[in-house]
Length: 465
Ligand code: ASP
Image (cartoon, rainbow, N blue to C red; front, top):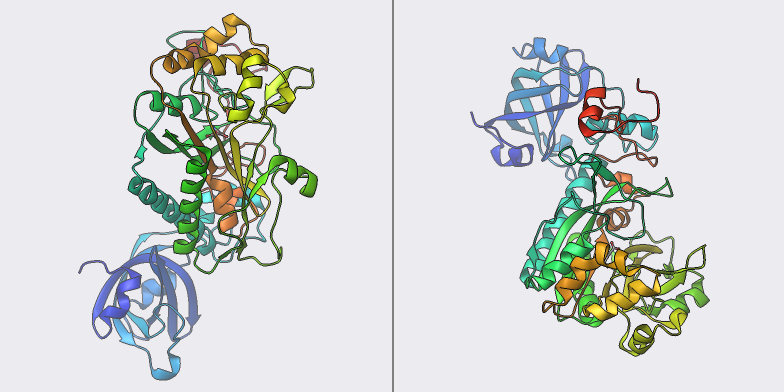
């Protein structure tokens, strides 16, 4: 008999069915054994009646065993019907059980929401931790958000394009992860902190509307709720103004909330636009929490923060970019940029999007004219040689007919955390690392063999184990 998914069992009421599932709970009541089963579509209660040939196996199986069950889909007597529960009107009378895989007693409980379990144990046994309904929901909802985003962007003419992970340093203001090259000993790739340069080069290449769910890598000290690799919904569009990018993204976010989280309220539509200066004066933060009721878990207060300064001083007193070296300036600041005057007053065409006090994205209209990008790099004190070496390809592209363009990237993990009312991004990432960047399940980072190091031409200062 063909497998029936648990969610479809009610339609087989009165007949027989085969399910393939995990044993969720087992209650031995002497004469009767109750077994609750779950598959990816839901839960159902099964019962083994006295004298059933399945009795012997049923008394052996334990929670988390994987089984194939053949049974009768019986209507429950009226008094036992549980209206609000999935399959509350039926019970599977078990005729036979085939064990597909046994399970040791799980080291962590997979049934509750898991909040009482130490995170180290949860991450070490992540394949078990992900079985809990809360984690199944978070990861499946993440998939729904990604699918809907793809649909919205596809409708708006965007093309999803993958960009390389083995690349060069990508100036997003963080430290790079580097990967040694075996074929060119002593040389290194860097993992991208963001696909910034590639997406702008795709604008030079005439794609006009690009997006990607991009993995980004940033080697930061363990600071707050961060992951060394995280996912951005990254997009770039040609011939676009700040308003175009903001409006498109605002509409997409509203559609996502209204479609997938209809019980949530968006505080203000259109999203308020708050100049950086005002945000700092009024809230002392560039990601202010403007919720009118901070205790309402279903209130979503989005805001755009705009008009950021383009440059800030480093600890050493030099100028550096506040967000992104590729950000352009507002038209009214172009004169100062080109003349390299009033640098502290130059305003970037930069917009961040915040939600309930978190930055969930940011982007800008870029400098698409080579001379403007060159000025930014000069203000930051880069030598002619460094500019050529590190930014030459961008300057060449901008000398080859690159349209004006701009874009944005959402921090998908952060957005999902808020939508799912979670406290940490680790709750919405299937295989999350600890706050210190360790993968406790795979045990990464790890030592590599002496042969591997030799092959790469690398010697490590710390003694090898
Ligand atoms: N690349 C930028 C970032 O990762 C986003 C953007 O400007 O599009 O923050």
